[in-house]
Image (cartoon, rainbow, N blue to C red; front, side):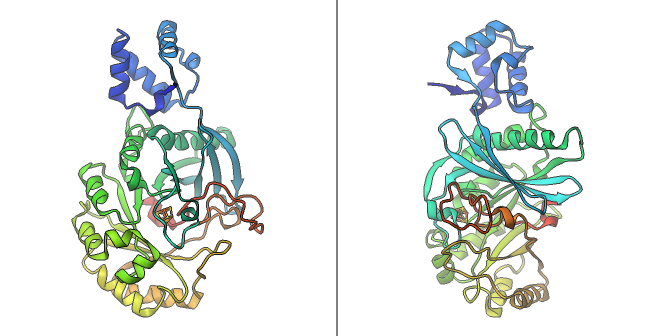
Length: 375
Ligand code: SF4
């Protein structure tokens, strides 16, 4: 059985190097090759002794062979990459072009999803498996390499922010999500600030608390989408387990740094949750919380049981929230023509072709509007 080096933490690489009777600095070199330079072939790790590379090979170690399977480009600059892993599983990651050569990358954390949200295309696939930490981080390495190839030396083209908001529920795979952030933040990895990362959840209350206790300094986004337990349970089965009261209590306990806000995602579904009474209840639920509400007019997909709201209703809803003194934005649509939008990941090819033979599907690629990615 092959053991993937990119699934190991720094401390595990140190133990591995130690077990081979080699000095500790070799572990750091190995870490940099795998997580900073993104090298996949042991023979390209040229500052490691040949004997070490050979020992690693003989012990069954290699770097996971993830690769880009397909790229789709939107007229607005958004790109959707399908990533294939060693076992053939495919997920999608989206590079949202935020202007000025900056991209926010939407990462997948699972193949499929078990959460069953009624408005989400991913839910129709069910849950297949968790991604490993190395597979989650591979999406970053592959997207950076892809951008570098496309930019041909133009350093202004770069990924500045990450949202764990693609395919799957990140907090249902919390340990691997946390591990995937180590090389993202490490100076021996990519050296990003934790302020550049947002984790989105449908509302797994114990895991929100566990994420807070992990002290990673990341932003939190909540997919709320309804203002009564009855309506939310109908849209999001997770609410039957963790109702609005428990979720709101967890948000009040979330350790917010000064100037930061929790993002509240609210998908607007015509005639379901877009009334002014809903807006009033939403404002009341969020009273006293430091939040930014992001309204997401529904992106329809084939056989979807919902319709997008009227534009005029979106504006009225927005105004009601604003009048309550809450910061509210309406999603900037990105990547619609390549199905990179909310609830559409996995639909590829001609956007007019809704033949229904899509494979991997994602969740929330454009849940964010531009300003949320630059906090
Ligand atoms: S919205 Fe997110 S949590 Fe809900 S089913 Fe889709 S991928 Fe899963």
